[in-house]
Length: 365
Image 1 (tube, rainbow, N blue to C red):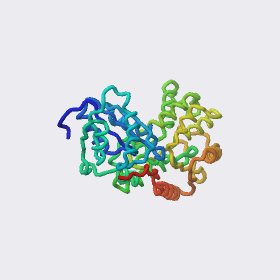
Image 2 (cartoon, rainbow, N blue to C red; image 1 turned 180 degrees about the horizontal axis):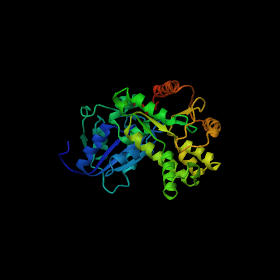
Image 3 (cartoon, one colour; image 1 turned 90 degrees about the vertical axis):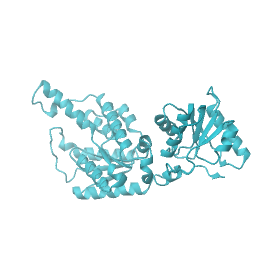
Image 4 (cartoon, rainbow, N blue to C red; image 1 turned 180 degrees about the vertical axis):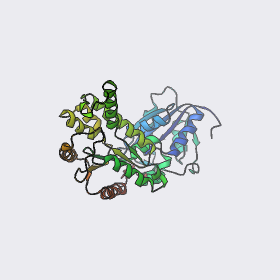
């Protein structure tokens, strides 16, 4: 539907709760027909996904459009003129500062004719039967997994259930994170894209040791020193890699440590906390922590480890800080097979709870 009359200023509005392939098709169609396009994101206060997130998602997907966000707490009733007046006040405020009047409204809805009439514009109806993209915001909210492929990378990253495996040195965090990702990939379908994120701090440590040995061949790990300012860098890089993986994976992502764990590693190597690391750790994006106990796991010195005697202290510190900060976690003990079984059960429980996205305001038509 890219041909036809060209308009000066088109309008697409909706909740985009969350945006999906049908929404993006509507916006792309409008962009092809308009010199300028405003995408108006209308969010109610009762909804679970923040307005700012939805504006960011639509801006990322359609950078040439003018994306605006408005709070619209007026219930919808297409048969009530007073309700229409209240909505139009909000809609007009969203485009008021644009220098060009709206002359086309693009929708897939039966209320499009009245919306366009009230703007003094033409209604362009796009795929009203949703034949091209048979999906709706209601369906996505009910079952994001079933509609995962209809979501953009930024939306998937926000919805992904992020599971962190953390623990003292040489307690099997990497092995478990890798095993969990493999377990869920074997389920097939959308789960075949399940990823795990390696620990960036380990890569950083290996680079430091290599740099030292370039100057002094054979230098041991015990001579590597860390500066406090390195830890925010490690935490930020870990966050970045995690966010990238979440954009391209399945509905669950496994992380071998995270920025929160980095706060404890700063304490272990330098004593005390680092406010910069703590700020990077408090993103609220992690949904479950799996704490690997040191008991029953032999300490293996792979050239980047020391302090086997500190493992009980580290396990206790992780447990105490997870508890203090209210992060949901599950301790893992026993054999590797038992730990994997316990971890899978905890992750399945997390996934079974779903996303619990609040219903939007009710509509009457």
